[in-house]
Image (cartoon, rainbow, N blue to C red; front, side, top):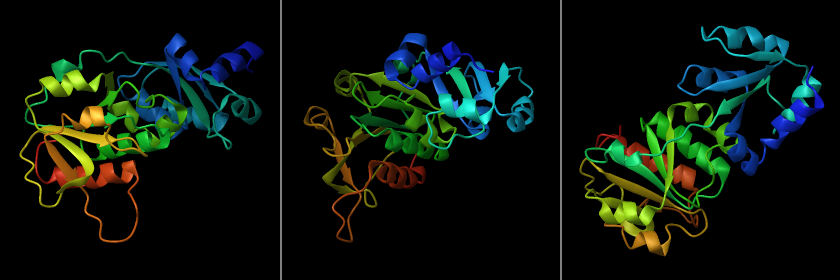
Length: 250
């Protein structure tokens, strides 16, 4: 049985300031939790309905699991209809992204993406196409936002997400900087080469003027119908699919 203090603590992690303070984030649903158990992430504790405990124990890794009932799960879940379990997972510290090296591969860079659902979709898409890391501007939504985690469907467990000021990075890089813009060159006719940053911008405003000045190759997904724009998550998927056939992503 969960105490009031346990419920209060877990519920506090719904908010960014407390995730940052305690260095923990939430993952919901045994399927996604298992992917984190099998990754390099550190599992602090799992709260689970009885029927999910066996699945969580089948990973071969020893984790702390507390059995709870459906009413307790509802009190700590971020979801209207909770899944079968909820995990507290340690937020990793990814700092030295410069050590990654950016030559001979493509790297996704997010400039001011705000919607956590979109971000989670981009993480899942990047994982599908073989990316291992994503670089974000400091004003991009937090990767450990519950909605972003949920939308990533476990793919966050395999993705390193770095936050940095983008201008110094782009100013000093030696690889091409591809910017997704409305007035760009068609991605289907683009000579990609085998390396570069792929800049995806804010949902409403696109790539910011401060970042656009460092774009060396403007690209676009050509429009054939009448829709005003594409969702940034969908745009990421289309561009990643095109890239997969032209260069080394990972």
